Image 1 (cartoon, rainbow, N blue to C red):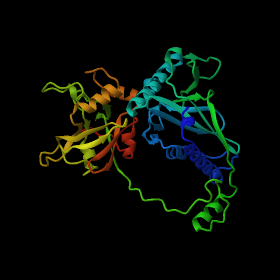
Image 2: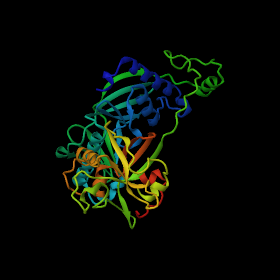
Image 3: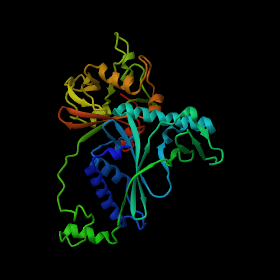
Image 4: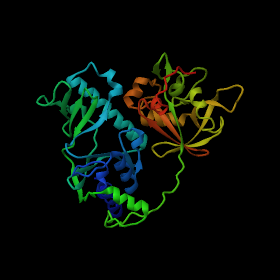
Length: 399
């Protein structure tokens, strides 16, 4: 298990911060079980246990430390919990039922896990759970496995027309057709730690005492004492740019057969099977003036698995301004394709990538982060991220 191998000082800090958040529960709830928002849990876990936060990337893992990917969960009550949503793929399985439906959902689930592991250089995955019980929190973990599709057995004694229960011999699941959501019953977790959480009756007065500097309130954490009045350091917001991996024609998404991620298939000359680029359309260039260096100027690009490659903006986009390009390529241009098509997607050479494949992999866009001049990071994002990133702007045909 992951938690048991963390240094004791990090474990203590993690429990202290969870305790502090839980003691403020009456700000949000009157339940005797401590309150913990899932976003707060993700941030606390990563900060206190020194893990990389992947939660906003909408991949199968919420955090990563070393080669371990972690799915983070927190709840009170039932251990039957959501693990994946497939609403954006509904058209591909809405006509299915029974075993055929469950096998299709399991295959989608497994593809997402596989791509997440390949993208981020993850070898092993686990679920890390904070379960909230009356006046306490428990830390539990269990394995995070792909579904064994060859051992799927439908439980005919449970469920209804909207809920299908099944097992693969390792875990029990159920799929809700009405919610397009896969749930897992976390029945085989290891309880690794438990600690009391005394919920503060009046957290408002407590917080006001911190703000006013009176320090008159009782410390909310015995080891840490009263929370110090320290102004947080200023952290500049990094500029980001989202780009689609597809084109649009008549409102339909597709991956062009002879450009973009299929650039290797273009005519005109012999091309390496790994030659690809990320399209940099006019609409995206116009909203991100100055984001990238001028055309053909190399910059450092950090891949999600920790690999660093050289990249640049290529292909003239405006004859009146040769510094503007319409494609993002690695330098040399086969490095990105080798990593994405072969290492991550595990596609054979010279097989055309389609939008249907991207849907199955669970990604259809990328987000570039500008760390500083000449230094960028790239992350791959789930279906629909591009539209959401730009406030659901209407899809437009590409230039």
